Length: 97
Ligand SMILES: C[C@H](O)[C@H](O)[C@H]1CNC2=NC(N)=NC(=O)C2=N1
Image 1: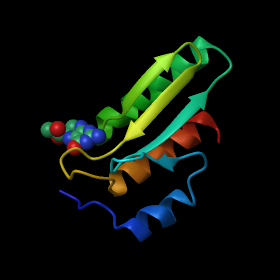
Image 2: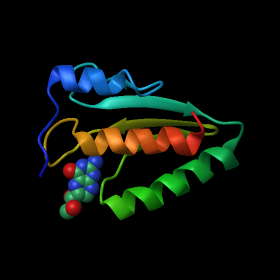
Image 3: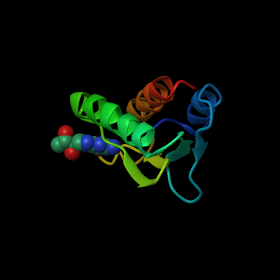
């Protein structure tokens, strides 16, 4: 199991991840993606779901119409690890940002 990133390492990673921020009061990162419509949002979720299953690393998320609010942390490690950074980076790529 990978260990949670240190505060400086997490901050350094976030500086390279457009739109991702730290969650207040919890060792996790979050971003709200906004798409053109529900089909785009759900298509994004479907693509992320396949990647997440392959990596055995899954997002917490909440979809309303064309927005997808995502929170990432590594439950087994109790914080943000490289796995979360990799998934966040992949999500940005899939969303084209
Ligand atoms: C048994 C299985 O490998 C684990 O429960 C995986 C599944 N997906 C996971 N997803 C996330 N976000 N954190 C985890 O610690 C995690 N653990």
